[in-house]
Image (cartoon, rainbow, N blue to C red; front, side, top):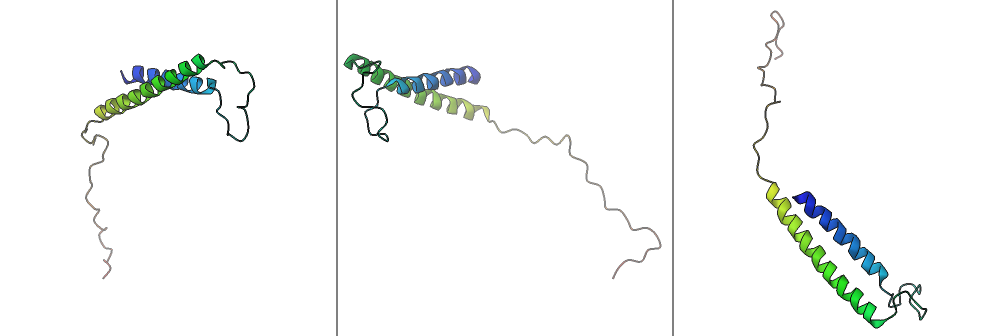
Length: 103
């Protein structure tokens, strides 16, 4: 289920980037773009549509981010430690007979 919502989240993010890039620059950014040149969408109605769609997509993006965070938090249950590969503790070896111990 998380995978489904992650795909939806990715599609929303891609659409949000696309809508933001379609918007006309309001100027200022290093003097590049903007200006009074004829653009693809110069009508005021197109600007309103892009602004509203940006708002909707941003809200959907934030909502899906919160949903994914809640779903991910629900999958991290406390689990018992797996000790199946742990080696049993061995007793220390006794020194060989006839070897004096250090004092």
